[in-house]
Length: 259
Image 1: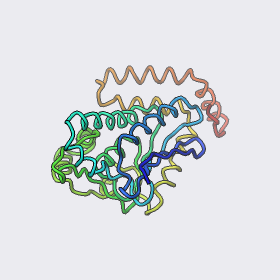
Image 2: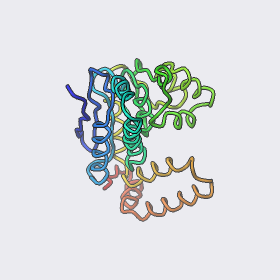
Image 3: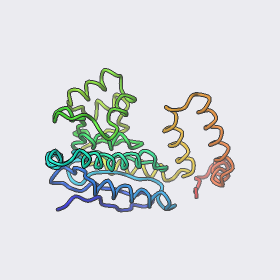
Image 4: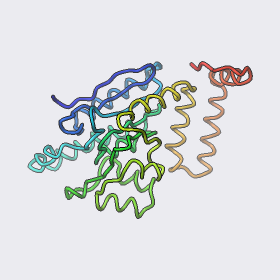
């Protein structure tokens, strides 16, 4: 069976499933393109308020197909450069997508699969799941934002160790370090991710978008710039119809129904 990215809806949540179980859902250019297209469509669809990314079967994603990497060594360097560019476009699409994205991780999340999980806004991982950069195990350096995310999320020495040695790190350890949001029993990562998505879907979508934008920009902004952005987002959201719905529901002690 060829690799593909499956797209299904559950309520107001889009589920994107990496599908190539024989290769532990290793990603390739077709998946990158399909992922970008799916997010582009979902961005303008008001019926979609959140996205869950998961893998088919026992694993989340093994990164890149090593056989393809081996074959690309016989090709001009530009071939691999273009593939990396398409991978990075997919990663940026996840990072900059205005609606919340949750990774539901079972089994292995390795290489760019680890990076994909880190690109998501929330990570739910099964207790038996393992994460690894693994690049140095193949005499390769990181891609897909691994070095960027890990050095921002973890102490420098730990990030460097994970990148230099390529060792596995457990979901529980990443949870303790604040990288993974929820650790659940094996086989329940997707259901927990969908439950989180439902909680997000019940909140004002314009506010969810604002929060994601604020969080993404915070590390690059000065305090003054971030305060200005918070002011602008707050004023915009106060004058959005959903604020009227939320404030009135609070005063009436009712459950709001946001648009």
